Each structure stands twice: as C-alpha cells, then as structure tokens.
Length: 353
Ligand code: DAH
Image (cartoon, rainbow, N blue to C red; front, side, top):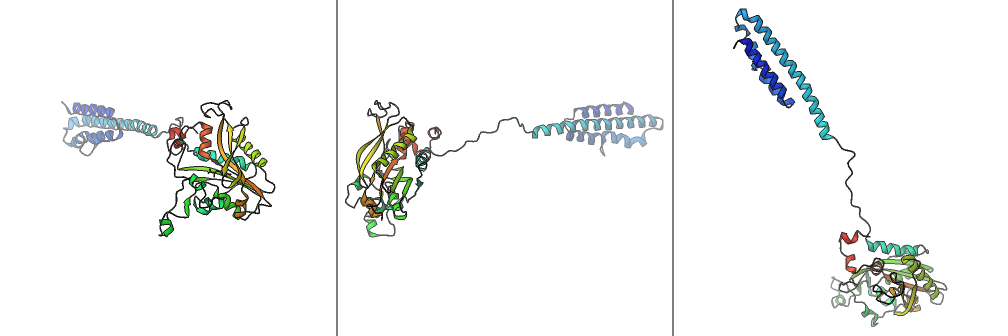
C-alpha cells in the first residue's frame, strides 16, 4: 500500500470513528487517537522528511487534506453532539408543570372536640361565656361544695380515681387522699361562683375520669359540658326553655324534649332530659330501645345550699345547672355503636367526621 493509500485508510477510519462517536467524551478520544502528539495522522506528518523527494508534494498535500477533513469532521460532529447533549440535559432537568401535585392529607379536629365546640356554640349564641377548671381536683370542689358530704351516697354513684400524694402524706397513703381526678365538670360551677358575681352564664367543657372499665357505652375518661346560670328570678321555665332550644339547635328543629324527675345532690328539683328519637320520631325503634326517647343530659335548679356554700345569697339569686356527656351526644348524632371507637386512632373511623 502506498503512503497515499495508507493516508486514505487513516482518513476513512477516522471519519468512521468520528461518525460513530456517541458523545463529546468519546469524540475527544478519537481526536487524540488520530491527531494527538502520537496520533495516527501526526505520525505521518512527522515522517514527511523521510518521504522521497518525488513523492513528497503529493503525500504532503494528501496529508494536509486528510488533516483538514478530519478536523472539519471533528468540529462538525462536536457541535452536533454538544447540541444533543445539551438538549438531553434540558429534558432531564425539565419539570412537567402539567403533572397533578401530590395530595396532602389534611388533619381535622377530633369528633369529640367538634361536638364539644358545637354544644358550647349554642350557648355562646345565647350570651354565655366559656369557663375552665382543673382536671386534678380536690374532694371539696368535686363533692363537698356540691352538696355531697363525706357519707353522701352520691359519692358511691361515681367511682373515683384518687391521686396519691407521693410526698408521703399519711392520709393519702391510706387511700384517703383529698386529691382526685374530677368525676364531673360540676366542680367548675363552684370555682366560677367563688370568683364571679352574678349574673353568671357559663358553659364549661372538659375531660372527666371514672373508674369504669371501657365497654361500648362506658369510658374511664370522657368529656362533659357543664352549664351554670345564676341570676335574679331564674325559674324552672328558664331551664326548660333554654335546654329545649339547645336540643333543637343541636339535633334539629323537629326534635321534642321531655323532662323526667331525677336526683342530683346539687340541684333541687332535678331532671333528666330526653330528646325525641331522630330515627322513629317517637314511635319506638331499635335505636331508642322502643321508648321513642333518648336521654341526653342532667339538669336542675341549683340547690340553695350550693349557692350559699360558694358565697351567693340564695334569697337574692337563683339558678339552674346542667351537664351532658359529649361522647354520648356524638354517639346519638352519628349512631356510633361503641364509644371506644372515639378513643382509638383508627383513621378509617375518624376520617368520616
Ligand atoms: N354532674 C352530673 C353527672 O356527671 C351531670 C349533671 C347533672 C350536671 C345535673 C349538672 C346538673 O350540672 O345540674 O352525672
């Protein structure tokens, strides 16, 4: 093979390799292999001095042509590859603004808090304010000041969690602690009457605790909303009108109420309030155990002894009070078969509300 043919072969191979180079890095390898310091073409150009005189012109021209051709091909391919690599990197970094966003799971208030708020809202609409009291309470506020002296049978109606004083107080160690987890929100009545002058119109939502084993209708910790009104000339008619309004606001304007005589130590007279069954409208069905009515709260006229004990003159003022279980109202509103569902974190249940 003559030198000219050899150069033609170098050119053909170089152009083929340039055409096949898949990226700028690979292309640069081809450039070094052909045109680098010890590249295939460079070797020929270096040897020109040894080419016989009569061939030198032709070989020289051919070598220069090959060099120019290879350089041009390199340049061209380089800009091609550069453009497509740029395009690819733009594609890779591209954001598809038409894709839908990832759905965020929104939290919501627990059903118990929603119902508690709804109950309070009805009374806030009547001008009441919200009052608060401690969950760890003394015997005095939970029982004594509510007209339930030490030997009063109402104390055994509610099994109480007593708080043991770890400082070693002898009475506490014997289980005679004065400190307890409140069994009812009624103690807030006493705190309010001690610190506020009538007129008093308050509701007090909060947790209460009883030594009950959890079952479909009992929880050892549940929620109550207490209400207290103390003013001049408050009568049982005010109590009835207020609670009838509450039931209609809470359950629907078509619902009726009835007041059944009952007993609570801190009210006299006392009553339990039933609301007509929303399923059978009083006819009797499974939901209301065939009575047509659902019991929803306890109430009564504040016993004058309770007013007096908290420094309010029963000759000048009278009042009414009421208390209701939030879980029970939630269960009645949404036909929840087991109150324990309300204490579990099962999202399949909680998400419904
Ligand atoms: N504290 C009572 C209970 O837990 C509920 C109650 C009844 C509250 C009558 C009252 C009331 O304020 O007047 O069973």
